[in-house]
Image (cartoon, rainbow, N blue to C red; front, side, top):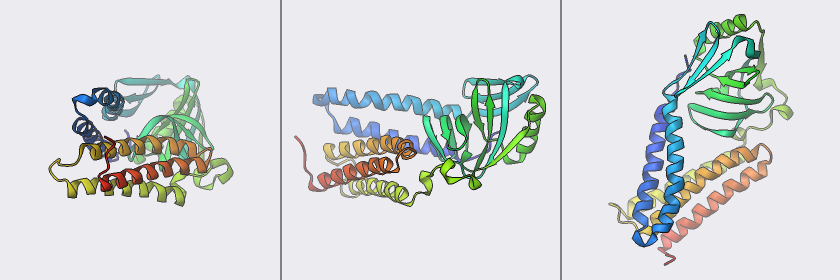
Length: 276
């Protein structure tokens, strides 16, 4: 059984707000004369919506099961079978891990895709909340990270160990050498300040439109600016987190770019400047 979190609810709410506003904003701000630009914005928006919806719906069927011939991880319509003879190492990871996406997506309470855990290696994560511990299974077909319900972990681990005839290793990330573990962006004060400032700037922009232009009376160009600011923010935070592991300055720069662009858009909106 998977460790329960509010990840699905958070994902539904976030998806409705972000994609709902984005599609409404594109349709509202661009008319028939802007058909080409509208199409260029709709194509990536629908692509990301499809990917997001697929990941979100797959979260409803995330689970782990012990069978006679192996461990089965279910995720959406996928069924990953790991034979007992394929398991090479079983590691119970404790403490706060330094995880970052290589090709995956996560939000509070949900993580799926290919991730790197500094000090451990890469892992295909099928997890809910791995930040404070997860089970890391190395196999001949790849490395996997799972997060069972806390109460079931001892029995699940022992069953995997007994059936695969492998010993259980324990790694505490909190006592790992910082040079090996690397710096977690969530623990970097400056990175967190920039992230929060980005959220604040977007909130100010949205409040400006809601207060001064209630009832969808905002200038179309201003609405489009907010849509672009939101898109840039989500694009940059994903890349900033990845880049931060190789260069903290690079992570800062991407956050600053989002902040500067949103600030510029706010100034343009306040001044009611149009490019037409």
